[in-house]
Amino acid sequence: MGYRVVIAGATGNVGREMLNILAERHFPVDEITVLASRKSLGTEVSFGEKTLKTKDLDTFDFTGWDIALFAVGSEATKKYAPGAAKAGCVVIDNSSLYRYDPDVPLIVPEVNADAIEGYAKKNIIANPNCSTAQMVVALKPLHDRATIKRVVVSTYQSVSGAGKEGADELWDQTKSIYNPTDDKPPKKFTKQIAFNVIPHIDSFMEDGSTKEEWKMVAETKKIVDPKIKVTATCVRVPVFVGHSEAVNIEFEDHLDEDEAREILREAPGVMVIDKREDGGYVTPVECVGDFATFISRIRQDSTIDNGLNLWCVSDNLRKGAALNAVQIAELLGNRILKKG
Image (tube, rainbow, N blue to C red; front, top):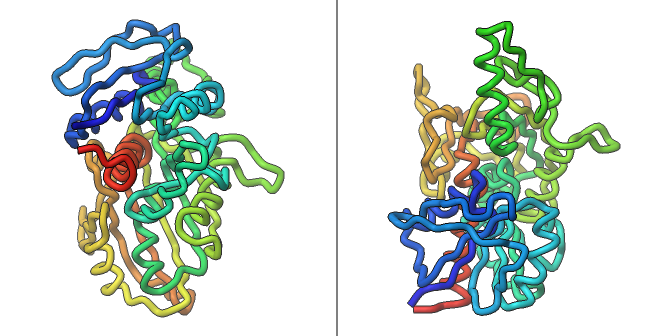
């Protein structure tokens, strides 16, 4: 016996990836339905060998459904998620709407699985920001060993993190570089993204940081430990899929790079590829389609007493969004709903 599952936002990049991962991981589905806005109504999407036609999110009745994976953005989530939760369907939300709500657990299953017990307060579980999700998978096992004091992270985030419009803009601008008569000025991004990098993701805040940077700070504290100090610089780069991060970590206790490497090799969801030779590391192109968070370039930071540097790469549409949501659904099923 399995679950009755809803995918809201099934025609978007993340929604389609959710369907792919549910099928790949053989999630126990008795019945599945896919929802979209009226402009995408009737669009067909794939679930394993099946083809599903989208229904109208606006009129859908969630009564009798077990789990709803939401990939529709904060505004639509605000409108539809409370009704779904009230109808008895557990909502796993990929937007930022509920991440900082103290009554909504923010879950990365490899890191804070026990927090899922708090889902019943609102019948909603939040999925973290893509850049946070991959970083905390790497941080948690190291924190358990040596206690992290401070993290300095610079991200190199792919355009798929900005949705289909972001990927289309990179594609169109790249082509236009070689055809000067076909100018493609920025629309989705603030500046040209092709052959460029943009140190600006989301809106600016009063202290000069961007909301994306603030999210990494707030979410790391909520997921791992509120005592950890985090500072982030988030950069959009001309890569289609795959977020990369350069992470500097300061610990309370000394942690040797060799021990850190072994700890990470044993950590759930982590793959260590770290050879000190040409190509002995992972780049975003190589992580696409994979479930793992890849760690490379592990080395001591000699400028502080207890410091390490590492390089972290993951498929942002998978671990950063769809995979983590499906893993939450698996955790929910195993620990809470427990159907056969």
